[in-house]
Image (cartoon, rainbow, N blue to C red; front, side, top):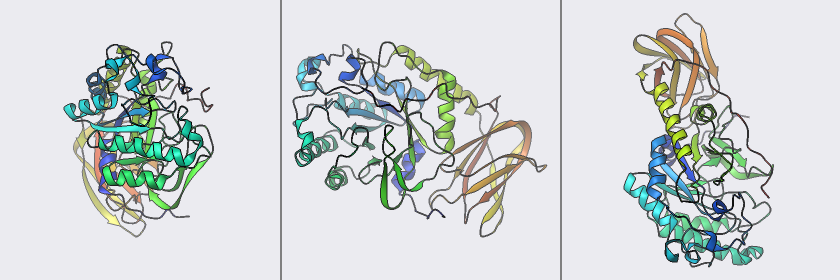
Amino acid sequence: MDTPLVLPTPGQLAWQRMRIGVFFHFGLNTFHGLEWGPGDIPAADFAPSDLDADQWVSTAKDLGAEYVVITAKHHDGFCLWPTSTTEYSVASSPWRDGRGDVVAEVAAACERQGVRFGFYLSPWDRNAPQYQDPAKYDDLYAEQLRELCTGYGGVSEIWFDGAGSEGHVYDWARYMEIVAEHQPEAMIFNMGSPTIRWVGNEDGLAADPVDYVVSESDFSNYTVESVAYEEALYLPPECDVSIRRGWFWAEDDGPKSLDHLLAIYYRSVGMGANLLLNLPPDTRGLIPDEDAERLRELRAELDRRFGAPHRAVVSLVSRSDEASEWTLDLGEEREIDHLWLEEDLVDGQRIRGFELRADDGTVLVSGARIGAQRILTFPSRRARILALRLQGDQAQLSNATAFQAGTSHVPEVAYLASTDAPA
């Protein structure tokens, strides 16, 4: 069945152009080496010694991230801001003598450093007694959402996690009214009235092809349940993955290898998805040195591969109802092994297939989608003119840039995330 054509909003296109964001998983779990806290760990255990949100955000900028998302409340129900809805928050901790607000510090650091701010608010709450009464819990959650939407300036993204919520009914219409009233420009992740969707795994890997128009999306990493929509929606995917095995910092964990992170980049950004890379602060309240250094190594390697662009002049040669032929002129003969393509998505995702050929007719690479960006690799060769055939009615290309990275090899991921729910 043909995928219907659905047009993106300007906000969705702007979000896709950002390409990279950084997740901050931080909370009581950090101090106990846990992924899913039980909801009864004393708030007094939250005691970062040197929390520095500017260090978090500057580290994200080292990667090239344009937005961040902070876990304002994870599944344990502990709130990183002094909410009026529960005593289970930073206000009941010794940090900043009970007068601290992690969310405010991150939002302020973002404002100072020119990075967009977002928050994660877990629907599942293992601490709130109201959770067993959906109507009462809706009141609590709606107020938490309202506080976060009104107290911290502009919000770029609101992250709703499906984990733990299997079978629970929430008043999403009410929640969405709050977002629409107070943060109408925010991207909404996966649930409620989403504008972006989960990629379907916690490995940071987009499927091929990456379709932006879908009628359903995956719900969580721990169930085959999916979220079905009443109609097809334009929902570009976000690939969330941690730089470590765990989402929260743990003493016995460490960062993924450079090759693993490169593999993630090619399989997320390189496939037309956004990458949301998690950097978990440690018990000091700082991004660990080894994680920050690995991030800088990744940025340096990306700059090495993509730092010397050769932008092609893109010309339409011919067009039929189903296909079009284009030439890509690099201006002079160059040694190249990568090509970065971008589709013009203003009128929707129209490219349904592509074939890149050398001037002698050799097929270098072919595939199904280009989207916001697609990184193509092929054995190094000298070329000035490349030919590109696009499948799809009125398919449009907005950019073609060639690179000589010195290798066409794309590393493999070293391991995949477990799909067993944490204890």
